[in-house]
Amino acid sequence: MLRIVRQLAVGRAGQTAQLAHTCRQPAAAAHHRPQRLFSSCTWARAPAAQSPAYTFPSQTIRSLVSGFIKTAAEQNGQQVQEQPPVTVHGWVRSVRSMKTMTFIDLDDGSTLSGLQVVLDKDVSNEIKTGSSLRVVGRLLQPTDRKQAIELSATDYTLLGTSDSKTYPLHKARVTFDYLRDHQHLRTRSRTFGALWRLRSIAQDGIHDFFRSQEFVHVNTPILTTHDCEGGGEAFRILTTESLNSHISHGVSQARAADAGAAARPDSILQEPHEFFGKPVYATVSGQLHLEFLASSLSRAYTLSPTFRAEKSQSTRHLAEFWMLEAEACFIDTIPQLLDLIQGNIQHTLRHVLDKGQEDLSLFDKFVEPGLIRRLDATAHKPFARVTYTEAVKMLQQAKTRDASISWEFPVEWGLPLQSEHEKYLSQQLVDGPVFVTDYPASFKPFYMKSSKGGDTLSDASAPAPTVACVDLLMPKMGELVGGSLREDSYETLHRRVVDAGLSVEDYQWYLDLRKYGSAPHGGYGMGFERFLGFMTGMSNVRDLLPAPRAFQHCQY
Image 1 (spheres, rainbow, N blue to C red):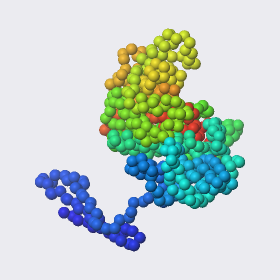
Image 2: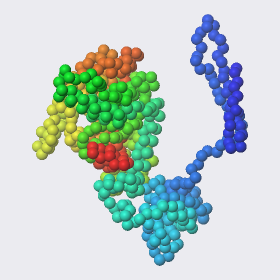
Image 3: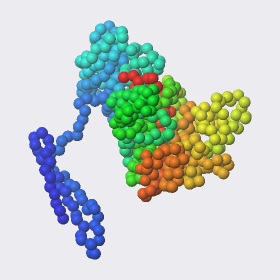
Image 4: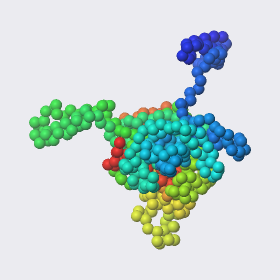
């Protein structure tokens, strides 16, 4: 037995604590059998003074009010006895003055309702909408229990003044268009405060789901040499030096062309300078990197920013957005992948319904009536499942039955389903989320496994080869999730890379994953802002990020 004792400095007074580490070394085995790399070890902390757990120096309005309500519940509805003074901080949403009293709606971002502060004097000349305050007082339950808990102030400190005449968020309701012009302040509105809290709660729900399924949270690169989706809409990364060298190279080429090939000196034909020695892009997806992580961790996921250089100013597109992506080894059928996606979404929605009820109520009332009921149904009912071939037939039959249906794009086997088709299928024909699987291989990326290579939902009526992939379509939104089984055969994937016109050398590392211990695997990606839109009823994706970036729009 080996015993190790370390001295750890603890506390300001230089107190020490002993940490004893006891390791049991395995007994020598006969015939020199290889021993385990790590022996059985236990740690035990010797008794000593410990640093107290950290507590933030001030409480939020949410925690103070929750504590007050809990105390009231413990007293069986009786009038709560006088509480000790508390201190709150926040920004003034509105000020209403009477002759000898002032009512302040104070908000610190922790709760939808904020807190009403009552001062026994008129301070309206000093405290304006938008000001920041520190207030000391006692929480009280008004005699009429239908009214909200309020703070009877005994003292206040004006921390930051505000010019109420120019403050953009005046008391009257304003439009989302107006708030988009004041993105740096729109978070103080009730709607956007609720939105960012729900965004945080949804992320907590996602992490909670993957922890429960033993996935490892990883961080994939922002800079990459690959365009995973093959759409050619990636942002190119250039330093100022690289940009200038490309400009000089172009000028030199033009001059050389004018002078003729014979007069062209070798010095002007030097390749432009690249910081990384090769072209590099802002990532459009972390999938390929997730695959090499999953090839050792078995299950991995990331929630990371991604970028698309798409020249669109629509309400559905952003240049910078967040993607949830997951990869799992040892799943080899489409139904297994669909179960994983459905489990992820439903777990997250149940988490949001449980933790964000108050904030959801705002969107249920003002943005989409019936929202909470819809989310609850989505969180508990199984999602419909059809193949692409079946979906095309359903849409064609619907148009045959109803001549008034007018789509901009035709519905034909072999053509991608457009947003208008996806919305009609999920909203009118299914009336709920629907998985569409086994799309034609002709318009899908090279890494997707053939439908014949996995146990899929595909039927024999498909007129051309299909791949084991899936899109999850949602009412009013269209596509929310895209995923597939990944091709795990080295020879097949090598052929696909060549057929797609890609460089085998550039993708050799990706091929190596199939060369050394290949395993069946699959994964998916979900645009997080789209999920947030589905969760809140907000239709403009630019309202779902604090500072949205889009074509010809990058404020702040």
